[in-house]
Image 1: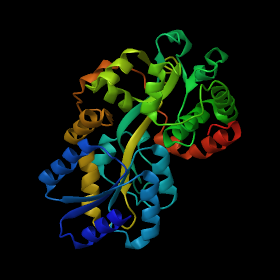
Image 2 (image 1 turned 30 degrees about the vertical axis):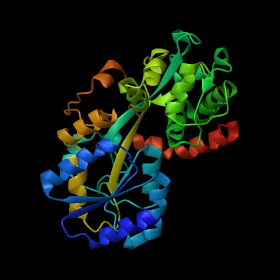
Image 3 (image 1 turned 90 degrees about the horizontal axis):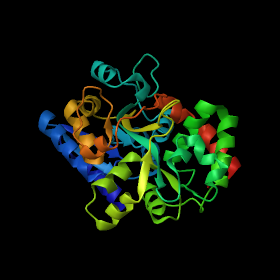
Length: 337
């Protein structure tokens, strides 16, 4: 908190032109983004980095006195929460509307979108080559099959990544169908949910689990690692693009919007427009192993390419965000803690 307070004081003392950024993206590679934006525009980026919930609470507390211009978050469920809390203002931008697909934007009531996706990541399954047969894990629904009893590992159902996936399942299967599926997954747990995505990958590699879910950038990070332990772990697992014969693999986003009380609104819009540029999209893909949201952007990340082509679910991320309410009810009822 002392660090955050010091940063806020620094914001107040900054000389124009500046952009004040609150970001839940904790990726060192994003430094290149901020430097490039400043080089192109002359606008200096001041930033505070913290977890999604900490940033949301800070903005609520600061109210109209908040120095923040832009908020970047790393999950559709959190972006939706910021939206319904009234933290964003609508943005009308020909550049953003032309470059970012409609299904990767937040609410648009004719005045402009309240938030925009800037990168995508897929939620895939990884399985232990010696414990699970590939034909057993072709879809998310397969995770509930009795044949996987005692083989499924997961992080907590309250994780935003899981809330978004479970919410998306409720959109595809209906609430009752998604609850039945979630109950089956819980019945197949190899252990109590814990840890992050990297922990799930390592647990599958060690044989503690047979199969688990992970966001692709965690897997690609291990694929690109020079550490012997990571190389050994990757050699023991295989990855699946789920639901290729139905709706496609679940996608989530990193995204952001202009805050309601942004003191530097013009700089904030320019920053979002910059994030939709081909150069920024390439930084996102290459630096943190994410996919561009802009069709014309070229990513040069051999590890991402090595995952191969896939069919992505085009369910709107705003719809996924709203479905977290249903997802929360489901995880409570089935005990996915």
